[in-house]
Image 1: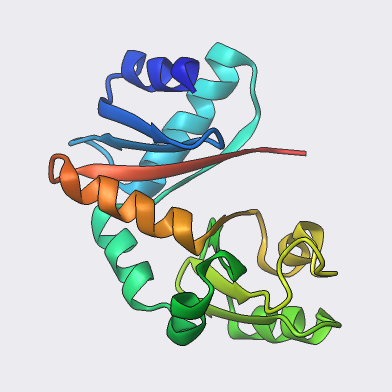
Image 2: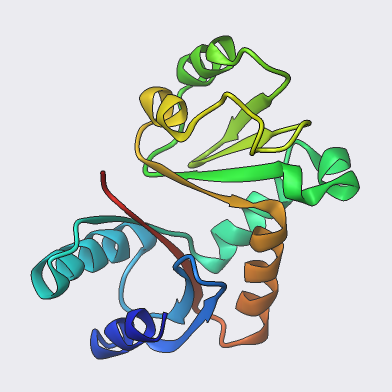
Length: 173
């Protein structure tokens, strides 16, 4: 994580901080939109580090909105570790969410709002037959964070400067 924080600092981003060891970064940038930052960071990671990764950037406003729009509020209060927010490159189409829900053979439930899908795993993610591959087949490139992590990143983003941006990189397979 230190190398990843240093990489972003070398690229001119400010206030770079991390949470956990899974690539959750928060930084400030005055210059680019979220989509521009994603392309910029993916290009620089490939050119400088020879890493082909997907990077998912959300602005502080988008982060607040995705927390507010959680369609599983009661479940998140009861057991936040069983709710996963799946970050997408583009907004999920209703047909694709319906197809994903049809693919699910267990008790999991999926809903989407904008560039996020919310999946509730009543029996936990470890026992689920809903795989990352199934999700990406229907919704495109994605990375997930459990609700606890989403809330922690939201708190960190609030405590710094006004332009902090959460980032979630995921290596392409």
